[in-house]
Image (cartoon, rainbow, N blue to C red; front, side, top):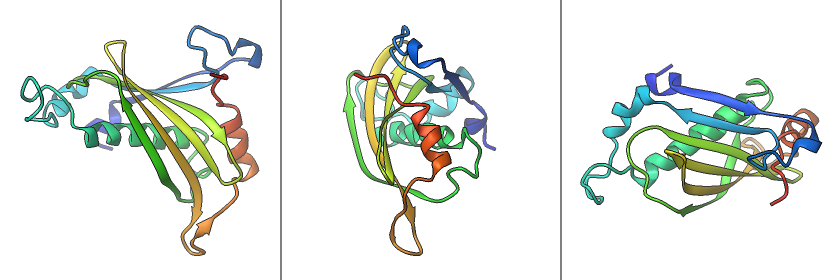
Length: 167
């Protein structure tokens, strides 16, 4: 486990379906927090060409943090539940505010569940400011057969229990 991985924590909020309209309007949200202990690591990943010369993270570093967040999300029910490979055939990013070095918060929400795929929305914030929204589609994939595989009952139950409230 690296210092970077050790600094990731999971904060999951759950409640009965009637509580879906909580302050965050999200039911069963998983939040990954990159805490202050790794701010110095992030400083080494700053974009030297960005405004302020070196105080901003590059897009690939931001997406890497999102990838770490969704992988930790998929490990929540236990490593065996999503042991098969998943692929990400679609990913979009909307940037809303600059992202500097320092702690990031990545909130993971399930937005859609299909037969073999599911959608996640990752909201990247820093200092309580929404900085980016990432939409990703993940597909359960069988590399031997080179095709998608249906989500099983355990995977589906985990994802259904974490569906975001209607937008």
